[in-house]
Amino acid sequence: MMNTFEDYILEYIEYCKYRKRLDAKTLKAYRIDLKQYCNFSPTLPDCLLRETVDKFITELHKQYKSKTIKRKIASLKAFFHYLEYKDLLDENPFTKLDIRFREAKLLPKTIPFHSIQKFLTTLYEQKELAQSEYQLRCCIRDIAVIELLFATGMRISELCSLKPADIDLESGNVLIYGKGAKERILQIGNGEVISALILYRETFEQNIAACGYFFVNRLGNKLSDQSVRFMIDRYALLAGIEQHITPHMFRHSFATLLLEQDVDIRYIQRMLGHSSISTTEIYTHVSNTKQKDILVNRHPRNLIEMNKG
Image 1 (cartoon, one colour):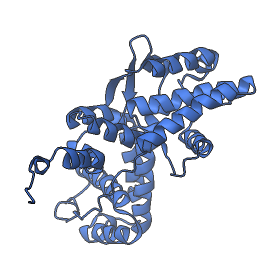
Image 2 (tube, helix red, strand yellow):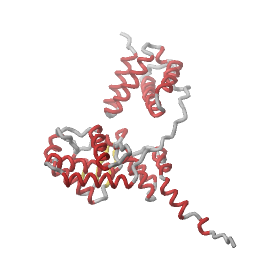
Image 3 (spheres, helix red, strand yellow):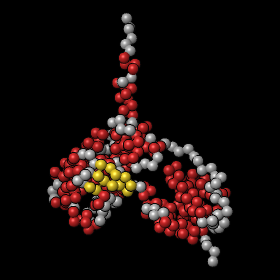
């Protein structure tokens, strides 16, 4: 019996899962993107033609933003590379296909330093004002989450996936599993952050052991990205911060504020787990505070005094 295009997609997802050991998030994206292409062109051999892929990419440009288009093209390209590797293609449709396009450079949104200060102050105030043990436990956990997010600049998905063994609070080391199955180790250099994490671990010790993840929700299950988003919204409201704050903005602020402290961009690249320096370089555009300080206070023109007699 001849294979259908859908069969090839299923085989490829299996290959990605077991041979390439890709994470669940990547596999989900591949499934969505390849199903979309299959719906666009379900029959063999039409779906393997360059003209079909070209038309599909044009349709993507009509519907999505550049970041999504880039991901969907990458998913499709990887799939056709697999078909080529399996000798299921006469010619890879991507071989002579121009897929380059200009991307709008969106500057990462950051949280001003004074707002971060206000946010953390509100968190600690709420802990002092807690009326019940339940409220106190929630505050202890929420402080640990935000302190760790800001201390390391890790992605929210990385934070929620942390296992108890990944955090060594005695040495201050955190083992992070990043994108593309890449590991990195970051150090927590602030005593208050360590204290907040130790208090959290002691308070939730049994829940952590039962759940198997370091951060747990009120039901004792793994903390979700969505729970952290709701938590941030709640504290931002209490702190009177009008700016909409997302977990990822703590990551952006971490990078920008370090850059403004004259930290070499290559160190920041390593801390963020970026495989390419070009991804990190976007922060150099954001760091306007430092630029303004240099141009206002350190420009040689300030040393020239004009005699206006």
